[in-house]
Length: 436
Image (cartoon, rainbow, N blue to C red; front, top):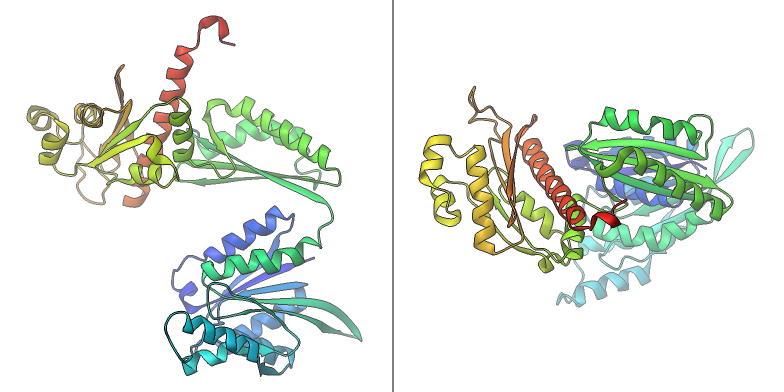
């Protein structure tokens, strides 16, 4: 069965990230299904009609997102109806629902423009929208392939805003699609930091070969790299859930043997979440002192729910004056070595540790660019400090890329250095007899 996605909206052709495609692709993968095609199309009827007709020919299930709003450029419903030769009618129940939506917000009468959102294709099932005024639609239809042959197709029309589309997809689309896949497919993602993508591939290649990758469709692998983070993805298919689970478990163990402590998490784990778990488990606290990363390390930490249990404070000291006044970095250090130096990173981390009275502190100072670099201190030079009551270590890096690339790599590297430091400290506390 082929499932195709068409995302409408001229903004998608002007650089806006298509998060709907990523979300739907991930949800389908979890069901053991895959998208066969994704098309971004502008708000122009001729182009949308052409893409819909192509999709009707080649796919069993067609999903559209966007174009269900009340304005002139919301053309999905009428275009789909015209392509299928079906009529559109005004659904009074939907119209009442839209009226109620506005009434709850203190608007006594529905804006005339919103009435067109009650236009439903004849034969379609209305999909409730709990977070907006545009209902979705599900339509089963017979497609004439020629030579007297017809095939059953299903069309889903979903709203574009993710906060409206996602609940509708989970409540209405997934239950329908789930019935199509009778087998079992389980996915796993292993998160790696500290190795190049090519190095990861070389390490896991024997595991992939042993699992039958390339010679069987039951095991699939993939590698994705972003800001020095490497995701090793694999899926296992079969008809026996126990055997599928066993294979997934064996693959995780085999991957762990070759990737070792470069693995920082699985599934939905992030570096910050993994660090947070370590801090929480070991009853330790953290503070940050950031310059070139501008608070990005702290943001990643505090993005995790419950981070207040281990995160104490953050200071963004962008100027030399703030480094001295808030963190106690000596003026002599700044004058002799500069703000971007091992000595400054060390004093920043130790100043944060003292200021917050935390168990660990992370500092970052560098040149994110695109300007400000010199021959001695080029763009991408970053010093990262990791301090504890025991000692302070400073690491020097030369990152490449855009300003955002350098900041992201610096923040991720700082979190990974902290992760490894905590693990090393925990390991050092384990009695020798208990070590394996």
